[in-house]
Length: 144
Image (cartoon, rainbow, N blue to C red; front, side):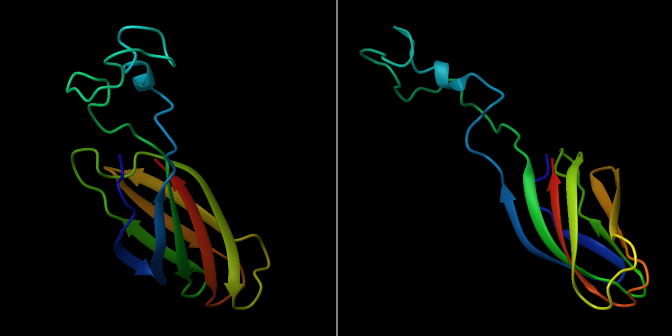
C-alpha cells in the first residue's frame, strides 16, 4: 500500500507533487468497532467495555485510498514521470481515477489525457496534450 506519492524519475517535462492525503474516516472494511463491547452488545457496553488491551481488533494498518495533487509541465506535447515503488507493498497497487485540467499555455485542441502503467509498485504517468507546446497542467490522482 502506497504511503505517499513521490516522483522517482522524470523523462520528459517536469512534475511537482503539491500534496498527498489519505482518504480515511474510519476502517470501513473491518468490524474493529465491535471489539470493545465484550460483555454486552454495542453501543451500550458495560463495565470493562472499551478498555485498552492488546487483544482488541485494532492491530494494524487498514488500507485506505490516497489522493495526490500534482502539477505537470509538458515539454512539447508530453510529460512523463515515474513514481517511487518499493518492496514490502510500499508502492502503488492501482490508480482508481485521474483528472487533468490545463492551467497555462496554448489551449489543447483535444482533451489532455493522463495514461498510467503500474509495474512493481512504480506508476509511469504520461500526460499527453495536443497542439499545446509547453503548458502547465493540474493533475489529481486517486490511488491505492
